[in-house]
Amino acid sequence: MRENFKFSNTLIMWYLINQRDLPWRKSNNPYLIWLSEIILQQTRIAQGTSYYEKFVSEFDTIFDLAEADEKTILKLWQGLGYYSRARNLHSTAKIVASEYNGQFPRSYSELIKLKGIGDYTASAIASIAFDQPYATVDGNVYRVLSRVFGIKTPINESQGIREFKLLAEELLNPDDPGTHNQALMEFGALVCTPKKPKCDSCIFNDTCYALQEKCIDVLPVKLKKLKIRKRYFNYLVIDFKGESTLIQQRKKKDIWQNLYEFPLYETQQDLQDESELLEIIQTELLINGSYTLKKHNALPIMHKLTHQTLYTTFWVIEPFESPRNATPWQELENLALPVLLQNFVDKYQNAN
Image 1 (cartoon, rainbow, N blue to C red):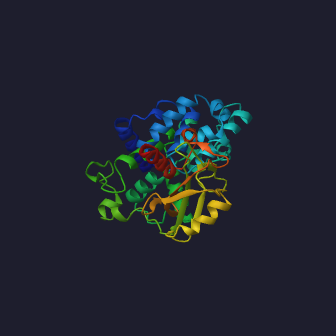
Image 2 (image 1 turned 60 degrees about the vertical axis):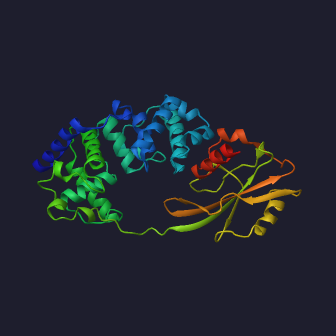
Image 3 (image 1 turned 30 degrees about the vertical axis):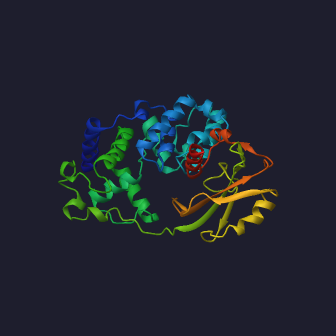
């Protein structure tokens, strides 16, 4: 127990001197803590901070967020990826606003029932906002604990998840759990980094297992299970005299659900022959008159996602007559597009 106290006390002392000045650390408001935690999932702090500030500026309270329409939220979220986070953010805002009168529940057991909130986020809110003794375990925590204590159990297996959670709970300072959790995550982000950790200045370098045994690069252990799927996307970009295009909302239940995109034709490999597109242009896009068709990018654009890699070609179709249900190009500014498509739109419009 005394060793656990020493670990936490040393960690907190380091944190109070070295912590970064981040906007969500200036308040223990659970709404702001929750917002920052959801935004920073799978997102670097350098990128996430600007999004956090945009959301706080746009939605001063959870009632403001709950009352917003999904299109506005997805547009603000554009570029962060993992769009289910944004949809869950909106759902939870509605629940907290309507069922909890705008006040986040104080208990871990109630927090974890909310959409998009798992063990880590529930523990973070409970400890930081409500000073309750729940340990947070994220990638930074896995790395610090595995190296300092020499834990070789894989972090992406159930046994490892349980082992690290138990150790994190044992080390937790019950008198100041919020500061302890933030200190441990900050230490992993600034000192015990994935590559080239600052071992010379590390506060645990006299007892760190990984440093003594020279196995820093192999800890934490993570088994490779992920198989990357290759997909070939062909976007059909209608451009009627630079005035209008065709855009549709993606209804498939995937990471881009409810975002907007050009008509899409997916193939098993890179499409070389444009003749395969002709029937689609006529039967699905209902363009029966004269038109020109050209490949916009000579080589597919590679876009990496967590479980898949997209190889995307944009085919520009210029019809002589305006298609049905056309959308003015300028209206795309108000629609949430996947970043892959937003990048294309920006470059295409600047070039034309």
